[in-house]
Amino acid sequence: MAATVTRFAPSPTGLLHLGHAHAALAAWRAGDRCLLRIEDIDTTRCRPEFTAAILADLGWLGLTWDAPPRRQSAHFAEYRATLDRLSGRGLLYPCFCTRGEIAREVAAAGRAPQGPDGPLYPGTCRRLTAAGRAARIARGDAFALRLDMAAALAAAPGDLSFHEAGEGRLRCDPGQFGDVVLARKDVPASYHLCVTHDDALQGVTLVTRGEDLKPATHLHRLLQTLLGWPEPGYAHHRLLADAAGRRLAKRDGAPSLRSLRDAGMTPAEVRALAGFADPALPP
Ligand code: GLU
Image 1: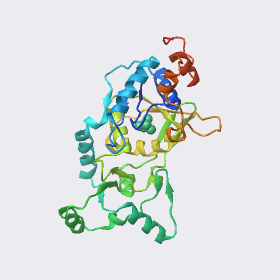
Image 2 (image 1 turned 90 degrees about the horizontal axis):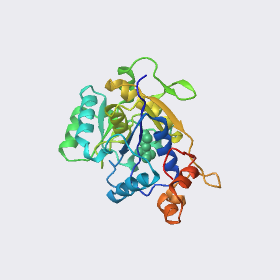
Image 3 (image 1 turned 30 degrees about the horizontal axis):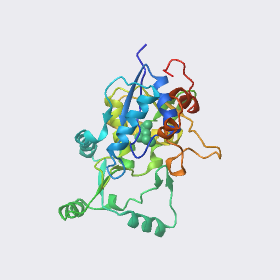
């Protein structure tokens, strides 16, 4: 049987906490090979010092990786080339709207269908003429690139599905995302684009990640199909919660792995707290 390739893909926007340790260990345990990917395209929120801390904390935890870590911020040209492929097929359009304009339009429409990433985009810029678009671009107006969902669904006919570990095949409904942003105004790519690109490029065969990202898989299968990329399996794991039942999050004061280490805990104790008591790893 082919080797299972998994990955842990943190975004360096802060120090890792127990929830991240759970995710990292889940990926590490599920794969014959496990890769580390630093998802740092959002240059407004990610910091090199957090990347350094992630590498150090995972090393302390006893995890090793089967290839040098991939840093997404070094690969914008590859994401650009992927966007160009979609654009060349008429599946993307520039969107000049500000958040405020979208919010006002949604409010004026009197209803706001919600997608997994927030209210669905009302399609304002999809209706611009080619000349109108060209004029705004020539004027230097900033724009995002959105997927024309109706066109994308027409270009990927048939039922899409994914295989979820322990559940079997689940049907996809990518349309729930509407005209999702694939390149932001301030960052020339997006999470959905980069994650599917990199999982394909790195030969990931089993995507393990938190169950909060399960809805995103519906869209990722559409992108994989449009781009001719292989279909990985999926294993969405539970999210660790605090004593009050709230999902662990930095903003709610979840203790960092670093603070647990500074308080004298051993890697084995931290791994056990994260839900993985693994005697095969060093103490
Ligand atoms: N970078 C994402 C995060 O930190 C995870 C992406 C993924 O595993 O697909 O939430």
